[in-house]
Length: 135
Ligand code: HEM
Image (cartoon, rainbow, N blue to C red):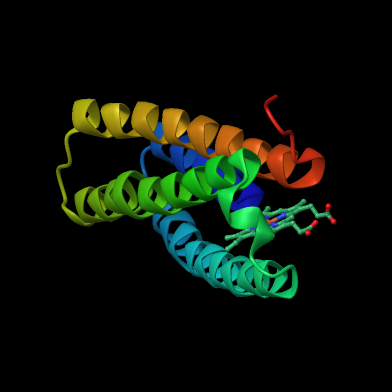
């Protein structure tokens, strides 16, 4: 995730310098995204294993419901907002005379997207580690 954020920054830096070399960063983001997908699948399987080994006691606990919600939001937001924006920017860059205004909007969207994803991961780790009972 951090590498995607750093690659995104490099991408926009290259874009400011006239798009030369920006394609490699898009490719990097696309392949790093696949690693995140694999990691999500591993988390899901190991999480289900933990649930099973504890006889599913966590399923009704508020921290777990919230954590699951954050996990789903992270995945859906990643696929829809993140994935679509990267595909969109990739397409724009392949076109000869792309629209910088449109790309600047995509940059802002990506910035906001990274912040939301970071908050979701922080919430997931917080909820998993401290398992607050909320009363
Ligand atoms: C981004 C994905 C995830 C991250 C970063 C994450 C992180 C964590 C962390 C840090 C803990 C605390 C470990 C401990 O106290 O020893 C934890 C506990 C737990 N996680 Fe996850 N988790 C993720 C996804 C999932 C998913 C998808 C599930 C279920 C399908 C899940 C189920 C659990 C359970 C049941 C525990 C409690 C285990 C116990 O103490 O009995 N996690 N998680």
